[in-house]
Image 1 (cartoon, rainbow, N blue to C red):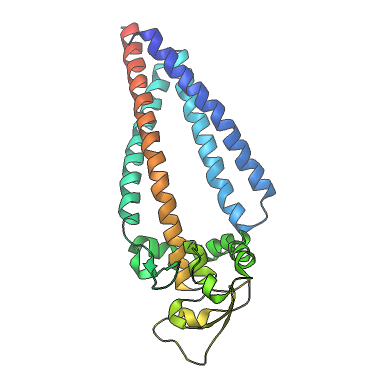
Image 2: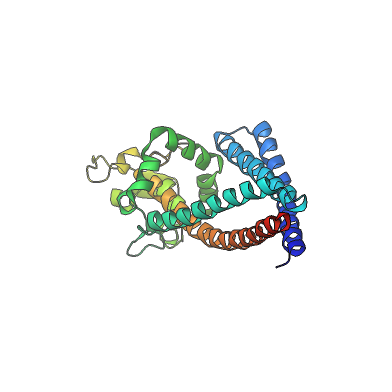
Length: 265
């Protein structure tokens, strides 16, 4: 690859990345100013950090390639190499922690139920911390996942309800466990018995109040983890594509750096 071609290609790639970083940064700043809920505030800082990082790295690559600044190109390649290593490590880690666990099929039911102990210890610890779960629960309440579930199934009979397919979060957070054997009156309205449920503490945690339901249940945490697990598997595919692109850009950068050294010798 010639000196001019490799440098121009690297410059173009980094200029495009720089342009993409601008809306990411603007979105993060806008979210930080407009955020009302805990869930929204949880997202603003990571978005801003990603936007600033992409902007700085792409600017370093662009200036280094187009202005033939050797030390900037060297710094750019070091950062890219670290990104590739972290990306590979992150993909492997994600595969390991999400490889364990799945919903349990119930006889005669269209939905599955979820147990926290079925998932990796690392994921269990993430939702086991009270402060972390408070933020997650706030996001779930703000998303109105159970309110929508209630409105969608409020006119269904018990027979029809048991046939419906529910998401992991709906199954874990919006209804009591099948172990409880509560009497169905509505999707979020169940009649408790007088028994104390030792084998499944979620039965005592359940409340018909729409703001409470089973958001503090172990099944809700398990449903959230299962939903997160599915999302991470999709992200892993995107991450692999991103890694391939990084490796290509890194290779072009190596050619540009090598040619820059030759041109000065």
